[in-house]
Length: 286
Image 1 (cartoon, one colour):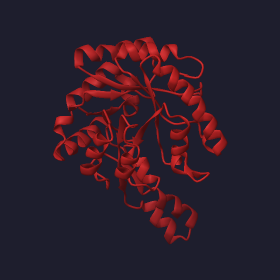
Image 2 (cartoon, helix red, strand yellow; image 1 turned 90 degrees about the horizontal axis):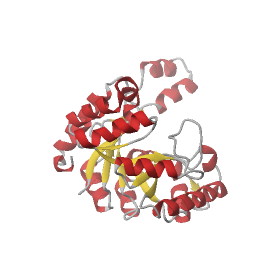
Image 3 (cartoon, helix red, strand yellow; image 1 turned 180 degrees about the vertical axis):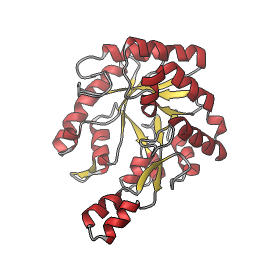
């Protein structure tokens, strides 16, 4: 059965302040029991604390995060040059999935770059498959640009058939596509889905003032910023339809994520998402 969990990118500050165990204890207290690890240092101390949460808190690790090359600031599993550490940590934390959060922007500018990146991802995916681990690619909106008549995400999917897809429904919406139809399109290749809402906020006072002053460039910036990330159930996406569609598409984990909190405490935001999903009838997925 599919399980709703948390994308740990949201917990970076908490991990740095109180450590992985205490952070995930608070997540478990809210009601989540699954976590996808991203953008935290995977040093021995942190991995040991993550491992401890499995036994003491019953946390499942949906996936760890990786990248093909060693780009600075990314999670420390450069698959094109060294699979060993990623495989070791996956086994230590009990997961058989790795995910690439995003290709470097330089790789997404031209179709030939995308094809080359996909071919290298396919090589890594095949090597990981030999170790019982599946590689996935997480979309943003930029992967819905069209190149050669195909969306970038389709180029990646076509050229790397051994790599699955992690569909982020907020970024699908921001890319101009329908989340439910997109989940159906990639059914069978999608073991993880990001649950992230899409909210239209109020125009800021600064934006109103810029318009009144005739500063159209400043107004346009503020006007664009009304598109916001939101707690699940606090925006405009139809999660009553999205969650069943994700499960029908083969998702094992549905991971709550919110890229910006707009001043809210992360645990309050996660509680809101949890409570709204329970209110929609998805308590059994926790």
